[in-house]
Length: 459
Image 1 (cartoon, rainbow, N blue to C red):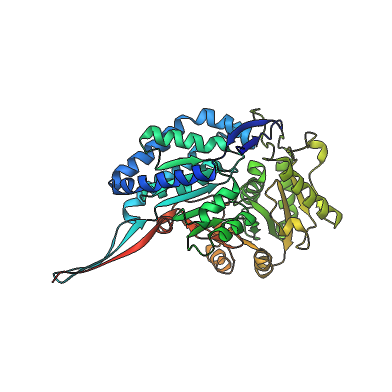
Image 2: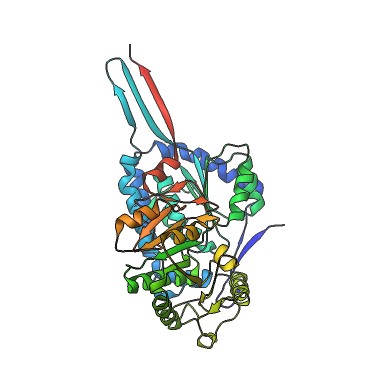
């Protein structure tokens, strides 16, 4: 019997799109086609690969009006925010810009006696397993540089956003990227694991849950297949006594609540210097109290439903447990009568501590706990008291102080006076249960290729 995946829309709980998954034999055949096509693709000039990829990117931009509405139906982001093409294009453009230098051979010697160099060569076939929360931007982080570097790419998108892979495939194929070089595939978990276990891919990049990352590692065990894993997060913000308070509140609360809190590097816990704590909380409550929860197709909606009702229920349970343990819910439920199912009201909690799940476990929803701290030492201890390490956001007027604190935080990226942004010039990476590897920047190219040494004696 043919297996299927179905996207249940968070807007109305109805099936929005259903697609059949590939059988094991069909999946293996797709990999074989990709492997065969990759050789000719890698032999093309780098400039040609860049041009074709960037043409594909532009074609995605031309689809943006339809894409914005599709995203609302698939994962609930309000149409007022206009989709993801800005970041999508920024990341692809930067990776295209640095490709020549990032992929250039390292020349050691070119003399009458020896030629010695290190080249970067593609892995072959790269599997990209992309998430639903920012389905275009997270996918392009790997798809664009992998193709530019000469790999074939198979994209397996989340079942919540099945139309995204189809849109990308249509755009890149129309631009001239061969159909077997870039394939959008629908695979169930068992088939995916079987392919990885039989060394079908030269590299696997996965963005998703910690449990999903463990499954990737288990499947790849003994194959020596390199993995890039971006998993969970519980990203902190720390507001020092010399911070620009208004800017800190605006940015950190937006980082906590935008996209219904479903951001990889969203802010999930905030520590504020005691002298600013009350003012910070008052301003934060005022901002969140002004949100409009509702149908994401409504231009007036500022916060839409979570992608699935079970995700909202997890956040509800974390919040309820915290309140039962002494936390104070600062947002009035009467302001959000639409709270039901996948539609989850935003919440700010004070009186929290690290004994509560909401301050330890990933929420991935529109809730944030705020704690006062006495000094930098306490803030550092609390920021590091986490199983995760993706980003941290520091707010101060003193860059030297920020760097001294940043050096002590166990995380992949440290921001000062900003948050929740992915700079394609910097390596996107994490530590602890957040994962391993690194995307974007020149390091992203290094992870999507392998070094190959050439040692030629001329005489």
